Length: 302
Ligand SMILES: *[C@@H]1O[C@H](CO)[C@@H](O)[C@H](O)[C@H]1NC(C)=O
Ligand SMILES: *[C@@H]1O[C@H](CO)[C@@H](O)[C@H](O)[C@H]1NC(C)=O
Ligand SMILES: *[C@@H]1O[C@H](CO)[C@@H](O)[C@H](O)[C@H]1NC(C)=O
Ligand SMILES: *[C@@H]1O[C@H](CO)[C@@H](O)[C@H](O)[C@H]1NC(C)=O
Image (cartoon, rainbow, N blue to C red; front, side, top):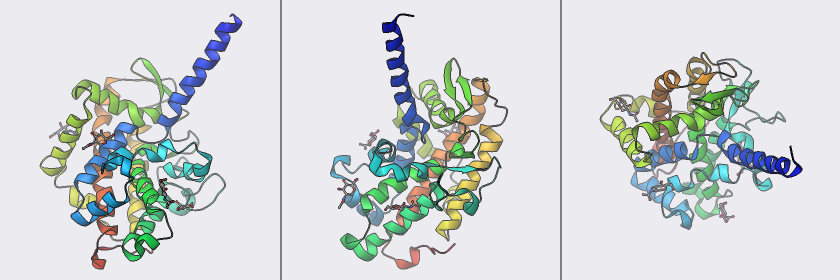
């Protein structure tokens, strides 16, 4: 190979590395936007006002436009601490145990997606109690929370430590190279958009909302929203994810396998339900932390 061709290849692989990197870090942009659009639609007037007040001007009042912020800042050194907050890893067991699994690589407790949701929910309660005297940047708390409630619902964000939540399991998605984590972050959603929704996220959103209000999930919504203590709720959502990871994401998959129609058809309903649940639960959290009625608040002890 010529020297020039080699350089070209090096540059090319670096570019594709950069392109792949952000995608391996949470529901894709499309997934986060859907979850936050569902949530914003379900806000009560008090919470809608608070969100409006905290969103940066540039968002134009649209929460979903900012729900990918936590991925966009992830590589900045200023925010390096937040990188482990997108996921939790289990010791290859189909269970999530907060004390065992919620820490970063340095073993610092609470530094995982479940701890982050607790953290930013607690921070946001100071909006009512302290307003602009809050010691926290509540804009960032809102953006982090909106992102991480999405992430905790992606089954492989509570996956196995040994394969980094499926990131190291290389597979083909139809004819393209991918990895199992990315299949769940993005490939399933993009294939659905292309096959059924004319690549129009708005059409998919309408169908998700229809299924929530008068369709298959309308009876489930009260159960999804049920939450007395934030800490237990967050643990439950993580347990659901790890359970789905074992039953659906890892099931029948080994490195090098080609995943196509069968896998897509059987897993798509799970992905759709998790996007919808994330939206419903984000709205539930925001409605309650921003409520002026203290009896609507949460008990914070675990
Ligand atoms: C909000 O932002 C998202 C993401 O940028 C976009 O897809 C959506 O159309 C916007 N919604 C409105 C009502 O502007
Ligand atoms: C909570 O948020 C603060 C920033 O406001 C951060 O320094 C801390 O590491 C966060 N902890 C968790 C568990 O998210
Ligand atoms: C809070 O965070 C946002 C987003 O990072 C930033 O634009 C804003 O300047 C911060 N506010 C303060 C008071 O630091
Ligand atoms: C909505 O529900 C119908 C069944 O009533 C199902 O066929 C469809 O896939 C669901 N759509 C989404 C986006 O979940």
